[in-house]
Image 1 (cartoon, rainbow, N blue to C red):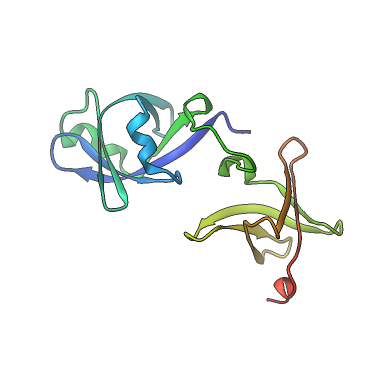
Image 2: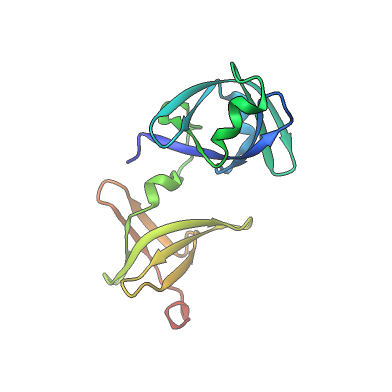
Length: 170
């Protein structure tokens, strides 16, 4: 399991006073209001940044970091990821998992057949969709509903799924 969870990506600057537009990679962008710090992955290190302001604009979060007061201070971080520690994460409900914990799981059917490896999660609005990569490189899409996702065992690294009729024919 990852020690840190990605919560957003800096997409661009906002204005000239050091604010940035962040594309949230969390299912609850309002969570940024409760964060005091985030970690910025520069590629060489993770810098701890103190959040001094949070606003929302359309599907973006606008953040202001303490000590970054003009566009030149922050512009170099465009495209960089923002992370939090697991301690900062919102508590999960029953049958909920962090996406970072699902990626890489072996996916098997309730009949014992290995289908592939969990590659990604698509957020569709109605329900999430799990992307499973097969050995041949093709992808299978599973709706993240109880009828399909029977069990997630993070300790064993296995997700057990029920294949709905016709799913493998696509």
